[in-house]
Amino acid sequence: MVDSATAPSQTVYPSSLLETSLELRQSLHGERILAAIDVGTNSVHMVVVKIQPELPAFTIIGREKDTVRLGNFRPGTNCLSDEAITRGIAALKRCKQIANSYNADDIVTVATSATREASNGQVFIDRVKQDVGLDINLISGLEEARRIYLGVLSGMELHGKPHTIIDIGGGSTEIILGTGERHRFLSSTKVGAVRLNAQMVTTNPISTEEFLQLQAYVRGRLEPNIDELKTKLGTDESLALVGTSGTIESLAILTAIHKLGAAPERINGYTMTLGELERCIEKLRKMSFSERLKLPEVSARRAEIIVPGAVILQEAMRMLKVDRITICEHALREGLVVDWMLTHGLIENRMQYQQSVRERSVRKATRKYRVDNPHSQLVAQFAIALFDQTRGLLHTWGPVEREILWAAAMLHNCGHFVSHGSHHKHSYYLIRNGELLGFTSTEIELIANIARYHRKSAPKPKHEPYKALTKTNRKIVSQLSAMLRIAVGLDRRRLGAIASFQTAYKSKAQTMALHFTPAQPNDSCELEMWSVNDKKDCFEQEFDLTLTMKPTQK
Image (cartoon, rainbow, N blue to C red; front, side):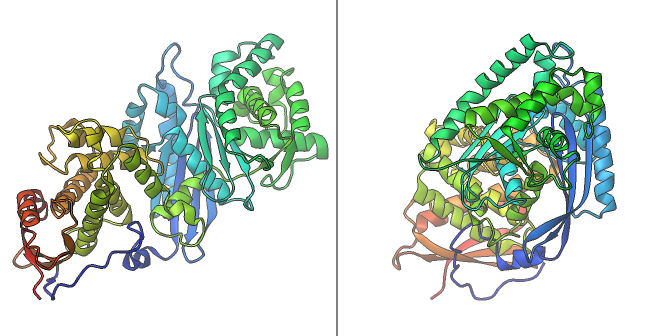
């Protein structure tokens, strides 16, 4: 640590609190290797990419896929089977080994429908952490849809025209509406190829009765979301359809072989018509499983579930009234890469709308819970200023933790929406269950915990939500909540009495002075000084120093 005892000056806040500082951006520049893993209901997929921040762009340099069928639950239960967990862990071990062979700088892993819904999903996540050393982030269906949209935008241009994107997974189907700007509509429906095959298909080949039941069931499940999507379209807007996922790619390849005599050299951008799909389905549903196994480009695992998957696509196209679909190879895995680049400040000019998706989601929550915005915004400014001024001196957290602190500061008082008494605990509950878009479940848990500890008791191991965090995440909560307490104290009267502040840290003496400038020259800010002194214990303990608060010398 170094001394920082220069004359204090007024803090100049950035135009956007989420703007990554130049110093942080420069420290992250240079080519990076990232592995992105999607733990789905049917398969574990991984892409390894080389990121070129100066473009900004990424190049896929490796892929891995293993069909593990997590969605094959124990019969009669809502639990992942022991066999599926074993297969999943083995696949993830291989993925990690491959990522390490590329010298990956980071590995991002998310789990979706099967793990999300299984009653023992957390057991699987804990086993992966213990046996493989990977942290799995469990994301919601809507967050999965948002990242699929990001992935598609990294793989094709939408030219500002409305496109519906459909991704058919093993356990759920995501349907998105966007133009290349901010998404207009996100949805996730619990209807997927593995789920339908397990629940509704008992005959081989599938009988006419079961096929008709399958069509009717899929229509009923998709209809509410598709009807809502249609309300987001202008009356004069035509609609194009983009398809992602292995099921849709396999169907496109089969129709191409029938039409062209060979699989297309490149599936990305290939167009399949509804008529071609319907003719393909008529053949597939009359085939037995062993006959489907003989089809070119169709694996055993895909042959088992391709009919239910095809029905989902067919019914979606019919309800959307589109006669063709364009294939995009980029989906959730590539979306994880784009999201990583966004959250690490590596994308500036492309997809500007997405740089603020987390900010917009937080601000939407402040409106929903009727938060006192002027106060919360000022507290957030103070918290970010304290974070920035002490980075490298008291902590080494980066842009992701910075944004988490901002979100917690904006929402720290949202618990007043429930009750004034113990509102910090209510804030935890509302944030934890509010499904903030753009954040992983782990990040949401961090935001909720930081807000929870902005007042009253400091974090304690006996508190279950805090106890459940990893050691590193507990440190994040303890240190950032201590900063938030100081920021809250700086606006005790909710009048914006303090215009700015500057910290001066002396490492040898283990002291820090907080020099503040009043908004009004004659305001002594006595209540703010008292409040900071009342709340500073956690800050002093976390960073092992003595904190004093003084007005700036004129």
